[in-house]
Length: 95
Image (cartoon, rainbow, N blue to C red; front, side):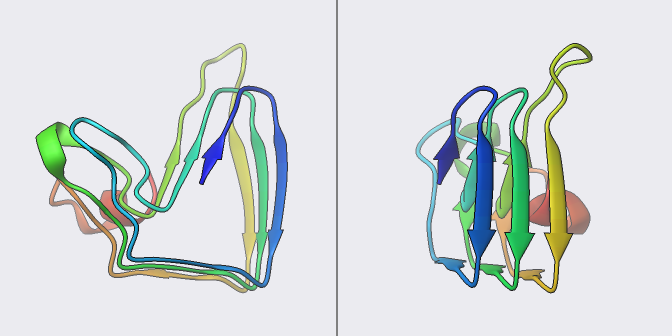
């Protein structure tokens, strides 16, 4: 799921499973541009992949800048089994 700049995304009771990025992509499950606010409630983000060519954030990838931070408010969600090229277990889930 792609979220464009300065968007508000409220995602409830949803699943993001077995998605992937193409070469050099980030955010196999969800990708958020700078300034995005994401609210996730009772969601599952699992088995997504962003491994090709240094992809990051297999489950959830949040971009952001000091002037346009990106934020995520996550409650009652399962985020597991996602992969990326970093081989860092935490970064593979959320970067």
